[in-house]
Length: 127
Image (cartoon, rainbow, N blue to C red; front, side, top):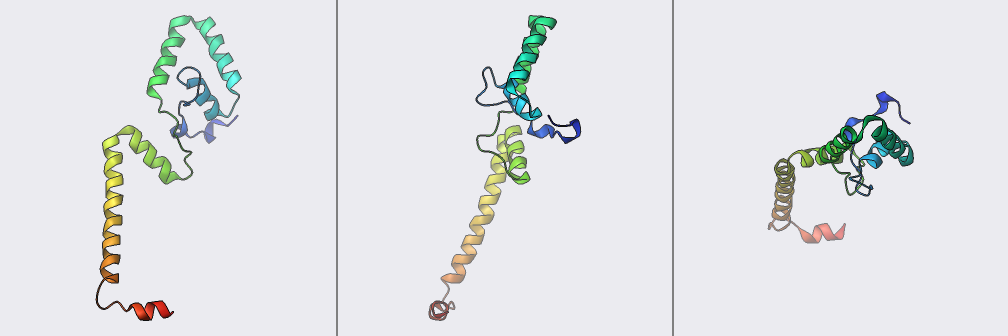
């Protein structure tokens, strides 16, 4: 189990392959504990608090938590992009479009250099 200071709240997701909305499995992965104990605690709380408070909280968590990314996030840049995309798809799409436009400009500059008359293919190929 992780210490409270080690928890990164931006990494709290609901699992895509959980039993019911994936809340318990996502919480177990976040806290680095067994899924069994998380579900056991949820069932105990269900009996001790009554049906509706815990079911309401569980459904609320199921709809508010972001789903786990399909591919694992290795870098902070990937994590930042996923956070932006899940908050606003338009903003995520504009971010991808900006990167694509920059890449397209770089490719055009490269093509202009290579297809120019001053580019000496014979000298480049002999090296």
